[in-house]
Amino acid sequence: MTAAPSVAQVRFAAERERMAAEIVAMARETGSETGRPAFSDRVMAAMRTVPRHRFVPQSLAVSAYENRPLAIGDGQTISQPYIVALMTELLDPKPGDVVLEVGTGSGYQAAVLAEIVADVYTIEIVESLGRKAAAILSELGYTNVITRIGDGYNGWKEQAPFDGILVTAAPVEVPQPLIDQLKPGARLVIPVGGRFDVQDLLVIEKKADGSTLTRHTIPVRFVPLTRERR
Ligand code: SAH
Image (cartoon, rainbow, N blue to C red):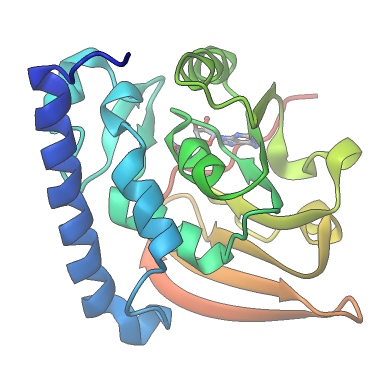
């Protein structure tokens, strides 16, 4: 027998629905730039399911379903829900896919992907964040998320090639190892630009012959992709 949902759970579920409605409206407004005026049922179902309040510091749980980024410690942020939904949509994830995320952060984006695909490999360079994300993902039963601490610039060679790669920190240029680790037909969704600039959210598709096709979508603002000190 499952226990009846608590008052808090009911409230969070209602807030998640409101958040989903805001994402739908924002997708429509930005559709001409992103090419996706309506997100797929798959993506929206994931956004309606993942308990975002569990991925933010407890003191911010009341704000978890506001459509904005939130601070998660170590100078890092959990992305705005609309951006999480958009990046997931642009990746075109399918149920059997194996995908890579660079920049685990809170683990929220990884959980959204894990609702849709078979396996999610995710890399975080800040050890404390990576550990915290791994703990909450396992507590919530996301056994199909595999975490690692390290520099995601180099991708995850042992598990490559991937059906899709999503990067949630911004490099100045597209890392070649990530292109190399895409299957033919797969996509890389990545913000690219300077540290103090607004970045460009790119969708890079790898063709069957290995060449790439790059599409610009909207301006975004992510934390920089940092590199491991050697
Ligand atoms: N996807 C996250 C938000 C990411 S914030 C979420 O859903 O919460 C960006 C994260 O990328 C930060 O945690 C930052 O530490 C991490 N990061 C920055 N450079 C990185 C690198 N080279 N490899 C892996 N992670 C990196």
